[in-house]
Length: 112
Length: 109
Image 1: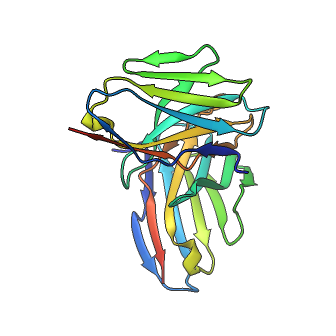
Image 2: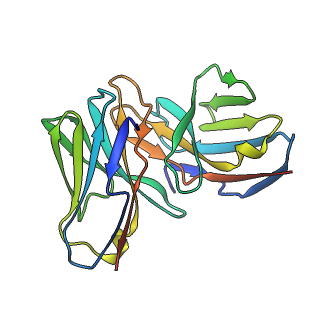
């Protein structure tokens, strides 16, 4: 089983719908992240969390919100999805004191 | 200018060739550097961290040049299985890691 698990793996939705992507981890890491990946743009940070009481915006947080329900769970929400949020979304974790990231398998979201 | 830049490639090389990728970064305060490998439609996976003194792991060698603000990855004796996208990543302290857009490598028989 993967140490960082994302659900759903694939989702097609319509403009205006609310979408939640979920991430859970068994690595015991404090830090969790959400990235999106678009062709030619690489990975861009949406939100990150140091621990359950700490949430921070990344470089492209507009249109997204997150919730850190527990140390092991970090969810990303799109309150009203729009087509330019079509992308591959990755959750990642890291251990305190290192910059090494461990990624989930990704969630491919298509907004029609 | 992007904070982390890579040549997107693709690099097409024959098996057994040596290939090198560079990655430049703009923030001189950057502290940690990494190379990740990403297979098509898969998640990135850490290939190696890049240390100031350089480091080697089998056929892979990573170098850091702080004066010129770039990191490099050298792959010797390329294998078909090395075909992937290679992402460089730079951390400026704290929790923000910036990724390059990736360099695609195709190794052909």
